[in-house]
Image (cartoon, rainbow over all chains, first blue to last red; front, side):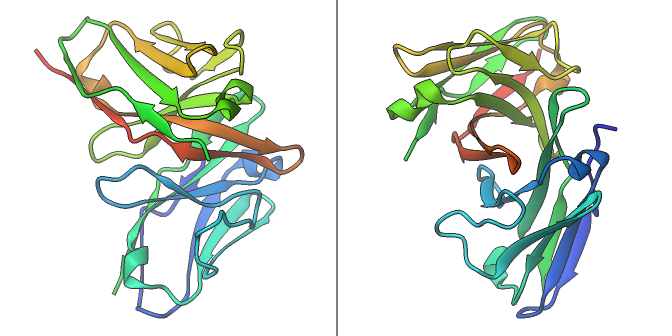
Length: 108
Length: 122
């Protein structure tokens, strides 16, 4: 299957921890990358190669992977983390890249 | 650090074609695979295509195969995306993005262009 499944919406209380998940068969072969997108802006890479953060991304963002599921965890969520989050992975069976449907994170 | 600058917004009629450009600021562009991604209003991200560093190999999404053409000019560090037979559902923001990969670790997209809004309307 060339699909990645994400929960459409997740909420977290300010300062608490939230996990956003992404499921798909292609994740058994390759690590997911994760993107944050705020309203009206281009997506921003936050996690790559399973658990690596680009320069400038706070260390409260972390990634993990097990089987067909990749996870993005925000430890101590801040108001500025409110955004849409997308996972992405390559599907080698069809030589395509695929995005998850996105998760809208609300920080309460 | 690569910066990707895209061409401006376009308004097209159904059935027409649109060509969007993406210019990279620095030379790693010539060694990089590049992708196009689009996002319809209020919708998620959709991967469209990838092109090799010299532009001699492309892979298109199955959904857009036949209507999409991606080319690049290494001399000008510019990449182009042309979508034909436009329909209303092609209205979206189109992004160019640089491919990054490490063997065994997967792929990731960074940086992204600022996006180009293409509106298809009669």
